[in-house]
Image (cartoon, rainbow, N blue to C red):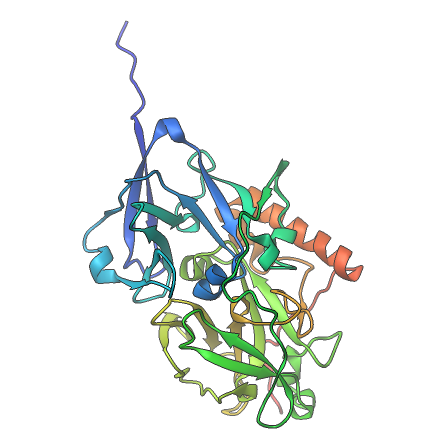
Length: 365
């Protein structure tokens, strides 16, 4: 009989950011797989990513990343170390995608698993962490994946930015909600819908159909957002640029923002210091030079009531945005997340909420 072929002792999994500048892999001993992965809800991770949560796996101590030329960590990534933290975070200098972080004292990598092919035999999500710091967060939408319950862990108190946020008042005396990245290089506030917006044929299409004091908010499971924000699920609040203070123009130049054209007619911004996703602009979201509407990364919002900012936002819960795209990447994960989001809506509001954003051809004529 011919000798029995043995499977390789390691498994190489390869990841790329959206623009492809970061192209790397990690070899994992087959005997330790699947590697446990967790969804973190701590405030620091949310503000560094501009996301409502992040999904990481801790590599075995001493593991290293293999970069495929011409990619390299030194040339293609920006390093950020938050004040008082022992972790270094790395994100693509071009598109802002976070690959993960490293504890250099312990020689341990923490990698974002959503940049790798979804394979539960390699990385397996099995828990939520720091849920106490994110009331109303994604952990309430994803109690399980298929029939597999996810554990909840709150090992220590999340002390970073964990104070209760208070409503702010703008220069016009009106209530405002702050959005701010981790390093503070990007910080602005948004206003509630004004009478001008409510009377505008185009801009009123972004106001909640259920409460004229709130904005529309939508989840996004598309591949572009996953590979740029490096998170399972992106979430956006839609607000006219003219209601942001300080005023930000269509060029999206504000503070430490850096912009990236992700596709023709679409521009995204992230903080060039900490890497937080901040804004999404499309040339279809305006009818004049004065009614540009922007998508704001909800992970940046500092709402007193919690991460979902339901005092300011009405969420579309009938179905995840771009569910088909998410399901092509990880069917069981996104089907479970969609069902959990609907269940949360029933518990919180007694119904599913559905609406659309204005079509590109909407005009004031």
